[in-house]
Length: 120
Image 1 (spheres, rainbow, N blue to C red):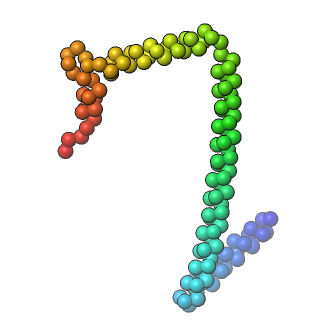
Image 2 (tube, rainbow, N blue to C red):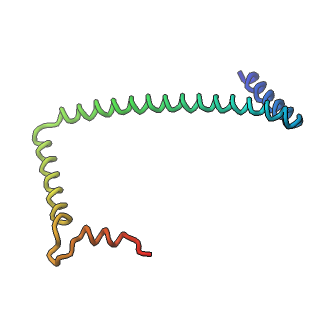
Image 3 (tube, rainbow, N blue to C red):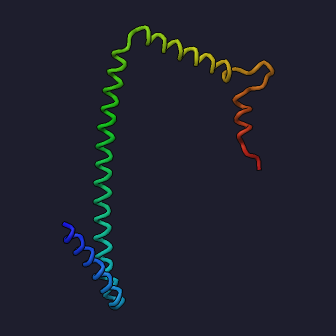
């Protein structure tokens, strides 16, 4: 296999050396076919890699979905209630801080948005 690869590499370098020494008309037509073949091979390789990546992502996604479903189904009622209460408290605190105008009449989200704008 190593001999085959070295033979291919040697053949390519010899062919490219022959093209550079040839006439411009002959070199452009031969080089165009080589570039087209190289582009096709690169496209096949990219397509194969994208397909493999999609398969891996699909496999990981289904595995994580199964693990998550199992974790939620194994969770007891007390834990679910605790998570719900913690989420409600977080939402309430967020509403108090960002959902209403402050006592001074200054609206915090608007002030934060204005401070991030650039005035040129």
